[in-house]
Length: 117
Image (cartoon, rainbow, N blue to C red):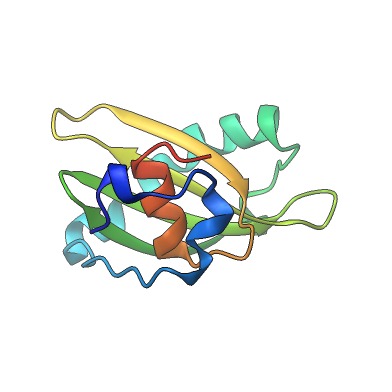
């Protein structure tokens, strides 16, 4: 995994970096449904996305010590976006979304992990 000190200044600059993460096991991957209420509340406020049917679950991943679940959707302006839920080793979760900026889901999760915007 690319360390923080080697991350580009801007998220979009990750587009040329090859990134791979292992998937979570089946039980953890299936937990993505547990986060839908929290995710939809967040997206309702931040992205004007109200319908869970507008989201497509893509995958889960283990990114260092954090677990990630990632969805894709199109915002009301037609921009391709990703939404993530991450869970730290102590169980706390974080929800976020942003336009994909041409990144793969793996590149996007790496940017989220390192807080690269």
